[in-house]
Length: 383
Image (cartoon, rainbow, N blue to C red):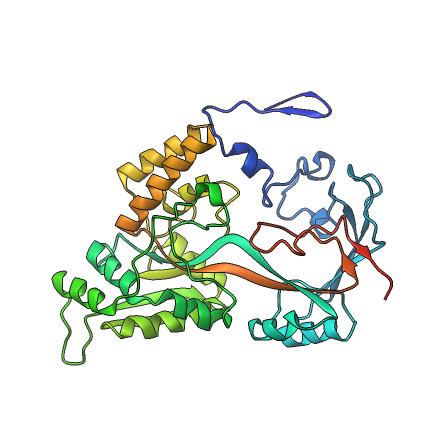
């Protein structure tokens, strides 16, 4: 990595990586100010409590547990934002947060809109409601290094036994789509629409379990597995639905609900689980699959490894022609359907509600497209 001038960074890679620029500009990669962090522990640096950035807004104040206030960055390279202040208010209860918006106390409800309120909000002329689509889905991550998850027929039986449309509908009050394939379709160029998950067929699931040697006992139970998940929704709701669905074919699921730190230790470090639930962005590039199902992947908690898939993941990373890369990732998704390293359940479509007088938000009217929070272009009309 070199800096030949104050405004140029030159990075030389050890091999071709078509995904590199996308990940470099993705939401998890930021420029850090050297004069603030050099020679310090980045995790404990006191300036983390009053961060320095280069975005459209700059930090003004933080009232712990209450709010964060930002003001326009007059030196922002696209020009200073048009609103004079941006205040993020923390309201833990989703119903209270929505009511604050409807009462005119806030202008935007970002992350807490109850799914059951979506129909009424669509019909409310005082607000604009957008369903923001993310390159994400909730999925089951089986520990393929442990019995019975190391049995492909057992994993296939689970895929047939899970009624994904019912799970998606009940967990989100009809807001989420059911997953149909092995990659989020919103990144359309990389999505293989023909690599479809098995359709719901509990009879087929029972046949597969019997063929694999999992015969029902006197209570009708063929196998007992644990499912480890975060103690927050939607994971709690999805876990309960999975338990109900799998019980119908004789798979007894023991639910293990943990806080995120304990979950991380048990699942990601100790690999002490049969099934876990996971979600997370799978963009901006399909090379994100490497982290989910590739060797040593950070989210490959089930430690799946397949030589053919591993080879294709490397090829997809090194190719630079998008149509050629699409073919490679299409092959990977077909193999994922065959070997089921993960079992996707639901897509991710989240409601965001904005007062009608707030204009020029990037997600307004962008249903079905990938968008992110960007308040630099926002304007407030008289009301």
